[in-house]
Image (cartoon, rainbow over all chains, first blue to last red; front, side, top):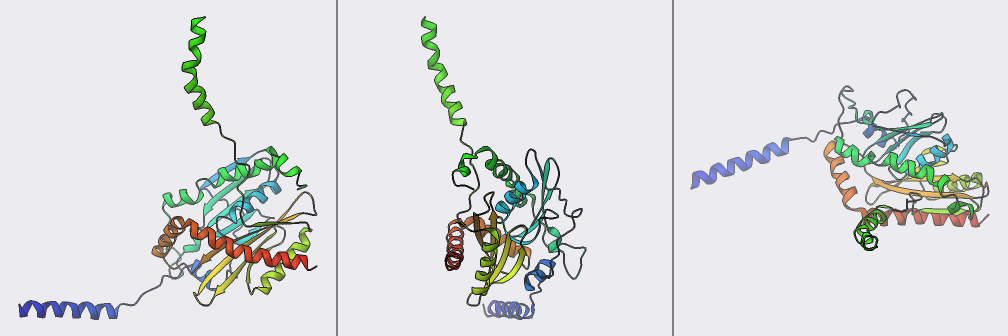
Length: 168
Length: 151
């Protein structure tokens, strides 16, 4: 009995010593760095790099400005925006999934959306990404964004009576 | 004559089914946190920048062509950061402008576990998120209203 107690005490002691010796190592990513510096060092990706492939939607019979307005209405509800440029048509937002939206000018207007995994690139080893999002999570985040966008864009055109009375 | 009278009976479930399938499409995805002002865009933009400075917010993003401002407020008590998107929307009628304010609470993302936990919380606690969101944006929008009224 005493032996068992001694062994138990020894084990507990070892566990305590080992746990005291562990050091929490924080994996620093570009995202971590950006948060620390209030996103001041964030640069919008160029158009070619920003042409994402997770989802695409073609929106005919509408102008770039109409689509851009709808993209802003929806994306500001999906995360806080850290970069945007109407000139290049790129919006980058951060929330549970960092996203990038690219609105391509032309007739018809095309909209692309993707996850900004690059922001989770490890600073100590840039080849590795600290966070890889599962397709199920991406589906939750982006699944219906483009459908919502289409409804938002065309609502102004289809249901004009909603706005005309207000003088908007 | 008999056949004609019987037809409607078996047609009824189909009619009910088809009526049930048809729904009025949602016109928009409205934001609850918005105010409409009868003032031009430039005036609202300037006043919004003033209000952000007054409440001690630090600017994350300022994109005037798009009408977008994102600012951060740091809560020293909880050491949480609140990020607020302000979208100043132009209208065809230049004398009208709508302002939307959507806040988010965040700490620094450090690793996968934290993010997954956060995702879970975000999806589970929708009512908390909505109430918090309303409070923060209402305070901002009320200040903006006062600022515009004081012109």
